[in-house]
Amino acid sequence: MTDNKKHTFVTHARPAGVPLELQNLPADTAVRVTSNICGVQCEGTTTAEDVLRDLKSTIDRQSEGFYTINEAAQIWADARGTNPKKQREKLWKEIEKGMLTAFDEADKFETLEFSGSVKYSCLVREADLKEIGVFSKVHAKAPAQETSTPAPVVAASDDTDKRRAKKPTIETVALDYMREVYKNGQFQSAAKFHKHLIKLAGANNSPFQIGIGEHARKLFCPAASNFF
Image (cartoon, rainbow, N blue to C red; front, side, top):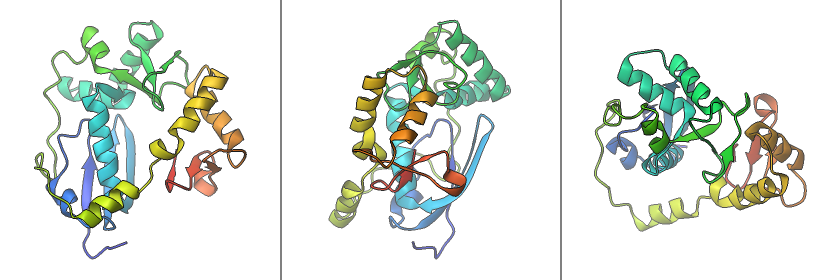
Protein backbone atom coordinates (compact mmCIF):
# COMPACT_ATOMS: atom_id res chain seq x y z
CA MET A 1 0.00 0.00 0.00
CA THR A 2 1.56 3.27 -1.13
CA ASP A 3 1.65 5.93 1.61
CA ASN A 4 4.11 8.59 0.50
CA LYS A 5 1.58 11.36 1.11
CA LYS A 6 -1.39 11.61 3.42
CA HIS A 7 -4.68 12.00 1.57
CA THR A 8 -7.89 12.65 3.50
CA PHE A 9 -11.42 12.48 2.14
CA VAL A 10 -14.67 13.34 3.91
CA THR A 11 -17.74 11.22 3.17
CA HIS A 12 -20.98 13.24 2.92
CA ALA A 13 -24.60 12.11 3.16
CA ARG A 14 -25.07 13.11 -0.46
CA PRO A 15 -21.76 13.11 -2.38
CA ALA A 16 -21.61 15.89 -4.95
CA GLY A 17 -19.23 13.92 -7.13
CA VAL A 18 -15.92 12.09 -7.24
CA PRO A 19 -13.00 14.36 -6.27
CA LEU A 20 -10.44 14.74 -9.03
CA GLU A 21 -7.63 14.10 -6.56
CA LEU A 22 -9.11 10.71 -5.67
CA GLN A 23 -9.55 9.74 -9.32
CA ASN A 24 -5.90 10.47 -10.04
CA LEU A 25 -4.43 8.49 -7.13
CA PRO A 26 -2.84 5.08 -7.77
CA ALA A 27 -5.26 2.33 -6.74
CA ASP A 28 -3.15 1.11 -3.79
CA THR A 29 -2.50 4.56 -2.28
CA ALA A 30 -3.34 4.71 1.42
CA VAL A 31 -6.03 7.28 2.15
CA ARG A 32 -7.78 8.40 5.32
CA VAL A 33 -11.57 8.56 5.26
CA THR A 34 -13.76 10.34 7.79
CA SER A 35 -17.51 10.79 8.04
CA ASN A 36 -20.13 11.97 10.48
CA ILE A 37 -23.54 11.15 9.10
CA CYS A 38 -26.47 11.42 11.49
CA GLY A 39 -24.17 11.18 14.49
CA VAL A 40 -22.45 8.02 13.25
CA GLN A 41 -18.76 8.93 13.24
CA CYS A 42 -16.35 6.80 11.24
CA GLU A 43 -12.66 7.18 10.61
CA GLY A 44 -10.14 4.82 9.08
CA THR A 45 -7.44 4.17 6.52
CA THR A 46 -7.98 2.18 3.34
CA THR A 47 -6.91 2.30 -0.32
CA ALA A 48 -7.89 4.85 -2.94
CA GLU A 49 -9.42 2.06 -5.00
CA ASP A 50 -11.75 1.02 -2.16
CA VAL A 51 -12.80 4.61 -1.46
CA LEU A 52 -13.46 5.23 -5.14
CA ARG A 53 -15.53 2.05 -5.44
CA ASP A 54 -17.61 2.82 -2.33
CA LEU A 55 -18.14 6.45 -3.34
CA LYS A 56 -19.30 5.48 -6.84
CA SER A 57 -21.58 2.83 -5.34
CA THR A 58 -23.22 5.46 -3.11
CA ILE A 59 -23.60 7.90 -5.99
CA ASP A 60 -25.10 5.19 -8.22
CA ARG A 61 -27.52 4.08 -5.50
CA GLN A 62 -28.68 7.62 -4.81
CA SER A 63 -29.05 8.28 -8.54
CA GLU A 64 -31.51 5.35 -8.50
CA GLY A 65 -33.44 7.15 -5.76
CA PHE A 66 -32.42 5.16 -2.69
CA TYR A 67 -30.90 6.57 0.51
CA THR A 68 -29.95 5.00 3.80
CA ILE A 69 -32.09 6.18 6.70
CA ASN A 70 -29.08 8.06 8.10
CA GLU A 71 -28.31 9.77 4.79
CA ALA A 72 -31.93 10.92 4.41
CA ALA A 73 -32.05 12.23 7.97
CA GLN A 74 -28.75 14.10 7.60
CA ILE A 75 -29.77 15.71 4.29
CA TRP A 76 -33.11 16.74 5.79
CA ALA A 77 -31.42 18.15 8.90
CA ASP A 78 -28.81 20.07 6.86
CA ALA A 79 -31.59 21.74 4.88
CA ARG A 80 -33.53 22.72 8.00
CA GLY A 81 -30.62 23.42 10.35
CA THR A 82 -31.87 20.85 12.85
CA ASN A 83 -30.53 17.82 14.70
CA PRO A 84 -30.25 14.88 12.27
CA LYS A 85 -31.06 12.37 15.01
CA LYS A 86 -34.40 14.08 15.57
CA GLN A 87 -35.12 13.96 11.86
CA ARG A 88 -34.24 10.25 11.87
CA GLU A 89 -36.75 9.68 14.68
CA LYS A 90 -39.41 11.34 12.51
CA LEU A 91 -38.53 9.07 9.58
CA TRP A 92 -38.76 6.00 11.82
CA LYS A 93 -42.23 7.09 12.93
CA GLU A 94 -43.30 7.49 9.31
CA ILE A 95 -42.08 3.94 8.60
CA GLU A 96 -43.85 2.62 11.69
CA LYS A 97 -47.12 4.30 10.62
CA GLY A 98 -46.80 2.81 7.14
CA MET A 99 -46.39 6.21 5.47
CA LEU A 100 -42.82 5.46 4.39
CA THR A 101 -41.61 2.14 3.00
CA ALA A 102 -38.36 0.59 4.24
CA PHE A 103 -36.33 -1.38 1.73
CA ASP A 104 -33.69 -4.03 2.37
CA GLU A 105 -30.16 -2.64 2.08
CA ALA A 106 -29.01 -5.95 0.59
CA ASP A 107 -31.80 -6.04 -2.00
CA LYS A 108 -33.59 -2.83 -2.98
CA PHE A 109 -36.53 -4.86 -4.30
CA GLU A 110 -37.31 -6.37 -0.88
CA THR A 111 -39.46 -4.38 1.55
CA LEU A 112 -39.04 -4.72 5.31
CA GLU A 113 -41.47 -4.72 8.19
CA PHE A 114 -40.72 -2.05 10.78
CA SER A 115 -38.82 -3.23 13.84
CA GLY A 116 -36.08 -1.95 16.10
CA SER A 117 -33.48 -4.02 14.27
CA VAL A 118 -34.44 -2.54 10.90
CA LYS A 119 -33.86 1.04 11.98
CA TYR A 120 -30.20 1.38 11.14
CA SER A 121 -29.96 -0.85 8.08
CA CYS A 122 -32.87 0.04 5.79
CA LEU A 123 -33.09 2.14 2.66
CA VAL A 124 -35.80 4.68 1.89
CA ARG A 125 -36.88 5.85 -1.54
CA GLU A 126 -36.55 9.47 -2.66
CA ALA A 127 -39.97 9.44 -4.33
CA ASP A 128 -41.57 8.38 -1.03
CA LEU A 129 -39.62 11.02 0.89
CA LYS A 130 -40.92 13.69 -1.47
CA GLU A 131 -44.49 12.49 -0.96
CA ILE A 132 -44.28 13.05 2.79
CA GLY A 133 -42.59 16.41 2.28
CA VAL A 134 -39.05 15.49 3.33
CA PHE A 135 -37.12 16.00 0.09
CA SER A 136 -39.46 18.47 -1.60
CA LYS A 137 -37.21 21.46 -0.83
CA VAL A 138 -33.84 19.92 -0.05
CA HIS A 139 -33.02 18.01 -3.21
CA ALA A 140 -30.59 20.62 -4.54
CA LYS A 141 -28.89 21.35 -1.23
CA ALA A 142 -26.05 18.82 -1.11
CA PRO A 143 -23.05 19.80 1.05
CA ALA A 144 -20.11 21.09 -0.93
CA GLN A 145 -17.27 18.62 -1.36
CA GLU A 146 -14.28 19.74 0.68
CA THR A 147 -11.80 18.08 -1.64
CA SER A 148 -13.09 19.04 -5.06
CA THR A 149 -16.08 19.92 -7.17
CA PRO A 150 -17.54 17.18 -9.37
CA ALA A 151 -14.71 16.13 -11.60
CA PRO A 152 -14.67 15.20 -15.27
CA VAL A 153 -14.08 11.58 -16.10
CA VAL A 154 -10.38 10.83 -16.27
CA ALA A 155 -9.40 8.18 -18.77
CA ALA A 156 -7.71 5.26 -17.04
CA SER A 157 -5.06 3.04 -18.48
CA ASP A 158 -5.97 -0.42 -19.72
CA ASP A 159 -4.09 -1.94 -16.79
CA THR A 160 -6.07 0.15 -14.30
CA ASP A 161 -9.37 -0.76 -15.94
CA LYS A 162 -8.49 -4.44 -15.87
CA ARG A 163 -7.42 -4.26 -12.23
CA ARG A 164 -10.67 -2.55 -11.21
CA ALA A 165 -12.80 -4.90 -13.31
CA LYS A 166 -11.21 -7.97 -11.77
CA LYS A 167 -11.50 -6.83 -8.13
CA PRO A 168 -14.50 -8.71 -6.69
CA THR A 169 -17.03 -7.05 -4.40
CA ILE A 170 -19.58 -8.43 -1.97
CA GLU A 171 -22.26 -7.66 -4.57
CA THR A 172 -20.58 -9.72 -7.29
CA VAL A 173 -19.51 -12.54 -4.97
CA ALA A 174 -22.35 -12.94 -2.49
CA LEU A 175 -25.51 -11.16 -3.66
CA ASP A 176 -27.04 -14.16 -5.47
CA TYR A 177 -26.31 -16.36 -2.45
CA MET A 178 -27.87 -13.80 -0.06
CA ARG A 179 -30.98 -13.49 -2.22
CA GLU A 180 -31.43 -17.25 -2.27
CA VAL A 181 -31.04 -17.53 1.51
CA TYR A 182 -33.43 -14.62 2.06
CA LYS A 183 -35.99 -16.10 -0.32
CA ASN A 184 -35.91 -19.49 1.41
CA GLY A 185 -36.10 -18.03 4.91
CA GLN A 186 -38.55 -15.12 4.51
CA PHE A 187 -36.97 -13.31 7.46
CA GLN A 188 -38.97 -10.67 9.31
CA SER A 189 -36.05 -8.32 9.85
CA ALA A 190 -32.60 -7.51 8.51
CA ALA A 191 -31.10 -8.43 11.89
CA LYS A 192 -32.58 -11.95 11.80
CA PHE A 193 -31.37 -12.37 8.25
CA HIS A 194 -27.88 -11.29 9.26
CA LYS A 195 -27.85 -13.70 12.23
CA HIS A 196 -28.86 -16.54 9.92
CA LEU A 197 -26.05 -15.70 7.52
CA ILE A 198 -23.65 -15.87 10.48
CA LYS A 199 -24.95 -19.35 11.34
CA LEU A 200 -24.31 -20.49 7.77
CA ALA A 201 -20.86 -18.87 7.55
CA GLY A 202 -18.03 -21.30 6.84
CA ALA A 203 -20.38 -24.09 5.76
CA ASN A 204 -21.96 -25.33 2.55
CA ASN A 205 -21.63 -22.80 -0.24
CA SER A 206 -21.54 -19.72 1.97
CA PRO A 207 -19.14 -17.03 0.69
CA PHE A 208 -18.77 -15.71 4.26
CA GLN A 209 -16.66 -16.46 7.29
CA ILE A 210 -17.27 -15.24 10.84
CA GLY A 211 -15.18 -12.22 11.81
CA ILE A 212 -12.90 -12.30 14.83
CA GLY A 213 -11.82 -9.78 17.47
CA GLU A 214 -13.50 -6.40 17.03
CA HIS A 215 -15.29 -7.82 13.98
CA ALA A 216 -16.71 -10.81 15.87
CA ARG A 217 -20.32 -9.90 15.05
CA LYS A 218 -19.62 -9.27 11.39
CA LEU A 219 -19.44 -11.45 8.30
CA PHE A 220 -16.20 -11.51 6.35
CA CYS A 221 -16.19 -12.24 2.63
CA PRO A 222 -12.68 -13.52 1.77
CA ALA A 223 -13.24 -13.32 -1.98
CA ALA A 224 -14.09 -9.61 -1.71
CA SER A 225 -11.72 -8.90 1.21
CA ASN A 226 -14.48 -6.99 2.94
CA PHE A 227 -16.87 -7.17 5.88
CA PHE A 228 -20.67 -7.23 5.74
